[in-house]
Amino acid sequence: MRRDGRDATPVTPGFDRVVEALGYAVDRRVRTTRAEHSRYGVGPATVERLAEVVAETGVTYVAVDDDLGPGQLADLAAAVPAATVRDRRGVVSDGLGAAGGSVAANRAEEWTLQVERRRLLNAARAADGESEGAHEDRVADVDRRRQRLNEEREALAEAARRAVETGHEAAGARVVVAETVGTDADPSPWAALADGDADANGDAGSDADGDPTRADENPLAPGEPVTESIPVAAGTVALTAVPPLLRDCPAWYREAVPGTTAAVERADIVVVAAGDASAASAAVDALRDTDEGPLLVWRRDDCAGDTDPSAAGLPAELSVYGGSASGLRERVTALLPTERLSVRLPYDDDAHALVSWLYEHTHVEAVDYDDVVTATLVAFPDAAATVRRRVDAVGGSVED
Figure 1 (cartoon, rainbow, N blue to C red):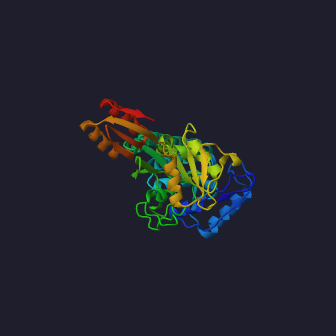
Figure 2: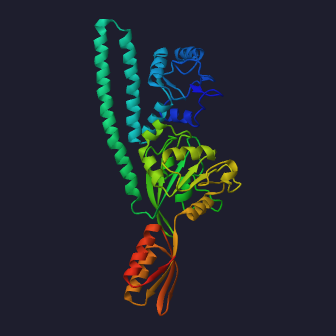
Figure 3: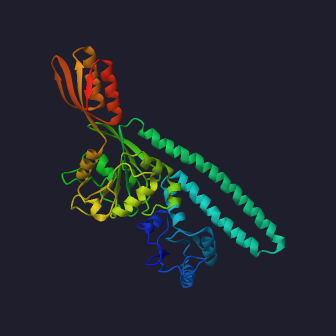
């Protein structure tokens, strides 16, 4: 079931595909354009129609493309007792969990228990005095299970954050790639940046091997961040793919993807494939405390080239690119945080050893051996700091 229209939450792109990835064929769609009923968040006529569809078709799963409260879900489930009812939070959390998101899977189970708790409270209020105690015991059991899940989720979230940090440790720069749910860019931003064998048109091949964002038919893959080291001229970049972003990125979604939040906050550049640059900007801003670091939105459907974000009222840190995969790689490379240094070294054995180290850890543009050794190079900030220390240790000098 979907809510859309002027007075209701917009339909979530790709929502049907998430439901299908959970193993349910989308049989019928029931739509409403206004939230007319405070109990369900949907109109009574729509609830009646939904009950008829469930009775006629034997539908076993009702997915509501809206964020409902536990009381609303409990009441709506009571209206269609033959079916499982999930709101957008439940569907997306289930989808992320199916794609490997351990925190999301935990959150989905805890959300189910919240709804169950409300159902039990409703039943307790309606029960006679003799059975009221049994309902209270069940509520207490649900509360204990929820507490265990909350404790487990804290540990899972910390592990997800540590995994991101570990993947970034040895890299000179960090690039995060994502899509908004339902975008399905071809090639994906991961393939565009990780595949150095794109053809002349900049298109990566259709083979999805190695692309965590195309690992299966689940549009929410990967369920947790995946990082790979990518060599570039100046050193190594940690390329991290994160789960697709909901365009409004609500609080419950952020809680389900702590690894994504950690990756975005640590990123030097965030690349999002999206048709709506403003929505992509809002989603990324919701995941990080500051707007530091550039956001590059790749609009694969718009091959007009760069777009001036200020003309569209977008943040200055955001830019929009509408070209090929190879062009995207060039844009990202140009945005990487690098420093150009000129090094002077005394002509001795230590200088030769240091030049060899520079070739391994920086991009050396030129070296000249004369009375002194001079080198021009490009390095990431951490490597540049190490260059300054090592050059000083052998009696040389560095100019920016």
